[in-house]
Structures are given as C-alpha cells and as structure tokens.
Image (cartoon, rainbow, N blue to C red):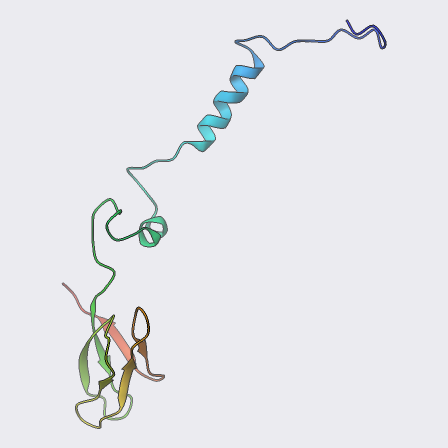
Length: 110
C-alpha cells in the first residue's frame, strides 16, 4: 500500500502481465522469411533474394516514327538508335536506360 494515497500498489507477477506483454511485442515483430511479399523481394539486392535473379532484362522497343521493333537491353550503356529512321530510342543513365518519350516497350520472355 502507498502510504500517502492509501491505495494498494499491484506488482505484476513474473508469469502474469509483464511476461505476456513481452510475448505479444515479440509476436508482432515476427516476420515470415520464407514467404516475403513481392515488393520486399523486388527491393532486396539481387544476390540476397530467396531465389537469385538479375534486375536486368531485354525488351522490344517500338519506334514511334516508323513502328519498327528493336531489341534493347534494359541497362544499355550506349545510345540505341532505330534501324529504320535513326531516331534515338533510349539514352543511358547510371542504371537503367531511359526510353525516349513516345516509345512503347514490351519485356521479352526468357
């Protein structure tokens, strides 16, 4: 009992509220490592994923002028020109190549 307020002070038992509180916070921190969400898998480094796979791919890019289709690597490090009309299809950046406005693309199947 507290002498000033004359109220009985209750101590949590070792197996009571305190232990339950710790268990519930630990349960909320639990993470399913075998079944990550697709968003988590995409953000993770290519070597640290559950199944290793590259970030790069090949794609078919359609020229907006002459409608010819050219195969381009997603991380191309050089400027890619259209075979028919010499229009710039994509420009290199530090990572993925930037497609020119108006160009449509389709990711190639493995």
